[in-house]
Image (cartoon, rainbow, N blue to C red):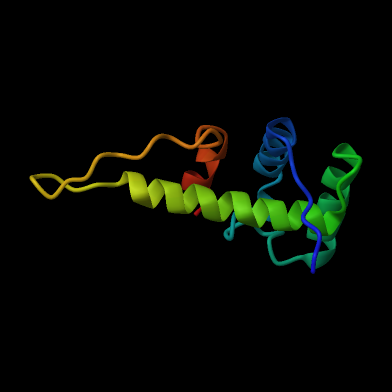
Length: 104
């Protein structure tokens, strides 16, 4: 059974802000996106900033945050008319991760 590393809201915020400042981690159009060496060095930086988190933990958490953001965004896009369902509440990291809308 694998152990789960928990991130606090503060750590999630730091991670999101760090990734937003390093487009090589999130923007497919960035010239450094395919450079694994550069990307690995950037992940090591964020791991150092988050002291108790490993590079793999940071990568996994980022992937989860990005997927959750996209899922939440899709669920908030509702149609019109009588079939319209009530919009779910906004996810707490939505504003911080809004830079993803431009990156993709």
